[in-house]
Length: 347
Ligand SMILES: NC(=O)c1ccc[n+]([C@@H]2O[C@H](COP(=O)([O-])OP(=O)(O)OC[C@H]3O[C@@H](n4cnc5c(N)ncnc54)[C@H](OP(=O)(O)O)[C@@H]3O)[C@@H](O)[C@H]2O)c1
Image: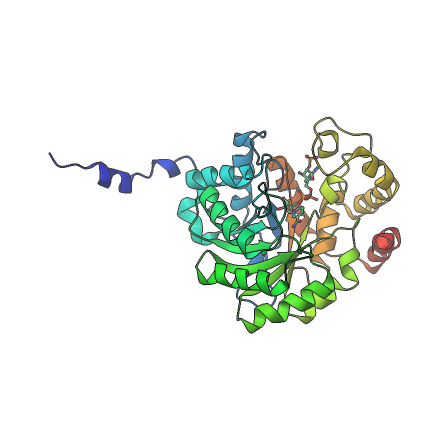
């Protein structure tokens, strides 16, 4: 008898039947050119640092991803060690990608990174060729992908020569494992050093990912001008200062918030210290008819050189609420002055 199992597998669309993306998904999002590259990134991108690990609820993670894609968010940001445990955000994304988004691969711009602690021993972090080559292979396996659109060196390595890191990044592109290269958490002098190395080797190096919010403006002095000068894109991570730039902490620490949870990088003391400024910023947002988190995103999108704002979300509703920032991007000079007076201490 003819074995049809192979054919049946090829034609099996059952994995897609649960999810049909919004047909109007490209109508409200705006897309910005990343540096002087061919790549357009959505004004708002989604990061999977939190809420996609093995201790999180997969149905919620799936709903966040669907909400993102349904609203024109094409760019998903991961790293080898997002979880916890390390690797689990990539694994969970891989599962959800297979179930929901596989048919839409060419509409997605998926990033991963290597450089922070990932596995035991001397090769499990930083910027050696050994670490980067092994990590990209691990990531692709977990993500269920043949290639990532963007691969970052996640942090500078104080000991490995930048040439070694740059050559490894070039080879990752040449092997077809990543389309574009980025760096993250580099200081200005390190950006100035690696840029010509990558450019001389014709590596499609397009972007820097840096922490940037109204409560952390350090990149404004040197890094942003240097990125603009070098025609590189910039994506701002932790734009809500991990949730502090919302109204959620104004009346105390809610039990389910990031600051209340164990093993996060946001502690209640930091929240308390920042509260006086947060309250004043909240008043400005209210006068603008915006929520504080919406104003925080709108403000970043107004900064010269910012390609995309990389938000996190612990629910689909948070993401929907954040997307509303796109409806009110304009600021008066008075509003900008007030915000500047309150936050230039964080430069
Ligand atoms: N390159 C790097 O070294 C690096 C470092 C950090 C992050 N990143 C990237 O940047 C992404 C974003 O970072 P992040 O998660 O710190 O960003 P964030 O946008 O500053 O904070 C996200 C958190 O704020 C809260 N939140 C978001 N929207 C809200 C809303 N509308 N109302 C109330 N609360 C809201 C949620 O926390 P609750 O749990 O309190 O609800 C959410 O998980 C990461 O996923 C990762 O991809 C990169």
